[in-house]
Length: 363
Image (cartoon, rainbow, N blue to C red):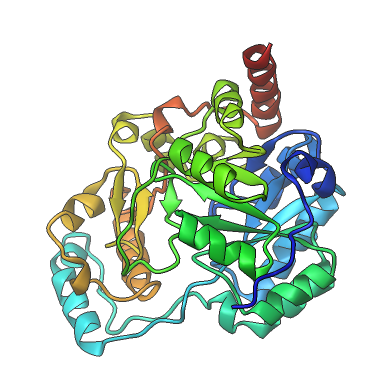
């Protein structure tokens, strides 16, 4: 890969370059973030975000349109850059059979076959055209990177590019490709690991360790993500060199999020103290609130799990069947290790609270 000559943004310039006042980024959280949530965060001076990874182009365009109606402030659009699935019919058939009894218990019918329910951005020219038409201030990548020519086209459109990374090698690859800033995703973070290749060993670096490694090794801004739930946490990670903090789990309990009542209750209940990193729900490692699905997954080897996001097709069907029985313990309730610290309030109020806490922590 050709090394890009320079990213063009220094640590102290990141917020100004984006056009925001506060070092508070809302994690995109596909399926949880909403235009109302993103608008509230951006309107308060942070960087709101929409996760487009689980959306087709039409749905993405609708969400973006609603967001732009709610705010004229900068925002981040996030896309998934996983490699298209390498599927195994044998693995998928065994997977359906394994969960047959769970569907029976819930009075549902298991799917006869599984689908690749999400289309990766690396193979989605329509989504690329939408991004170039919208020209958001920020676009972020998860699970890896698109082709270099795609990155160059987005940069040429004046878009600031971010990429989630979990170690130094991924960070070096992202910087060489032309990404402006890095999201240092610690192992304590909720939702899907941004690891480029989940078949490779995961060093499981914490947010604090990864942030320091990246800031000392690379001359690009680093946004720390994982386990940060309050202003004190933001202040602490910035003392370690981060230019900003990205919070996800902290916003799940906000009024504007798309999390249902059961998700919100579990977040601040006992399950919040026992989050689990699991691949069985979607096919890629992700941190989830402990529930029946994660318990089943403890005895399953990764080689038995269908590819991402094919496995997720079954998980969604099983969750839907269970919810018809008013059972919610098969849900993909993504959350980080800071879940017990979540606070239920409107996003604007949470932003004000975070700012007050940050000011007190920094004196």
